[in-house]
Image (cartoon, rainbow, N blue to C red):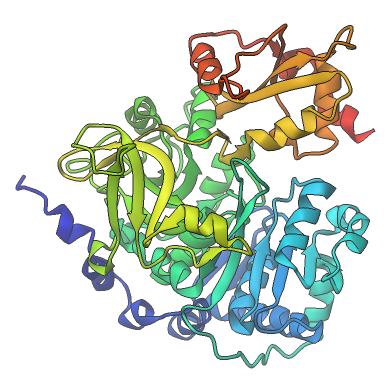
Length: 546
């Protein structure tokens, strides 16, 4: 084997040679969608796995235009924000693509959110219309009066009915590649979630990067990842669109249905996160582990130890990458086993279009290969900024360089390896959880004086949430179950601490800050992290609903 030219492979020229020339020239999401519906009108674009419903490119374009016409009739115009509080479905994807034609800005919200969390997203984004699943309508209605800009709450069943009465002859508006297309909220380390504003150009160029991987062997991509994150929106939905392939969409991850749906619809690739791969691998081996059509798993955050064992057991090739909500143009590892670097998330895609990366130390200077430092990036897909937060934007993007908050190392070829997060964000099963947000709720409990919420290692989900609680002087005893119920009534289920420890004291700095790094280091050495919600309180979710 000759020496691999990684620079040639990761250039935009490689992707351009593999994609339809007209498709590669598309600059906005609406333009891309219109082109593919004309180039491959009869080719299957979408299969919704739970129901088997299928759409050709032409059919889904028409359906999205009907949804768009219904939204326009509701008063949605260019620049307006459309909030989406829905589970994965064809309707969800149609709403996203309708926004592309209308010049509106989609604001996806996590469907596990409680009222307080949803209210913040809608108020901060100044959303005009909210589309929500019928079974989530009660949550939406309870906050209607606290969002002044909200003009309508429309259940998906009503939206479908309204769309059915339209012609689908939606006249799009003029949209620039630099126009905002999405506000994606990401957990803040010291404040409320921040809305990263992404442009049409950011979406389309990031989707084209999928062509650096072997799309010629990918007839279809299966994803059960949520459409409220960029992974499912960009790499699966638009990535398959740019390649003229088929998207197989599931409503959610189900261990029972995962391989069954891949087999049924003959998916040749599937998207995952490191935690999802760990969960799949934790299921006892079966003779049917290789009885499927998938050749590739497109993933981010795979532990090095899992790569080859996962490939060997399930007969797939791991395609590892990295991106951020604030900049979705990915890093990609080389797709062939004879040239990839196991454990690395790769090198910047489309370096020839200005995608650069550095690893810097505390002094702001680049570190040597193999040394740890913060990853900073500059790319044509960097967010336009945080919505209504110029101060945080200036802190995060300095002179065009996006400061990731991720500590990494890099070898002499530029292949990058994740080490840890610099900030206090807990990464549980693909969800970013701000420790301060959970702490703020715990501190409102009448028996709590102070607390520290930290990540602890978990073999399945990557990390779990632990709360270390200092009772106040009046508290005789704190029942961990009360803390679980207290948090669960205010925050989404995945933010509720699994492990709880009641302590007589906490370590503080001279300025009164809790020494979290000290607590985290200690927990990494422990196998038992204290009171375990899943073992001691297995029916906690049902209790909270009462």
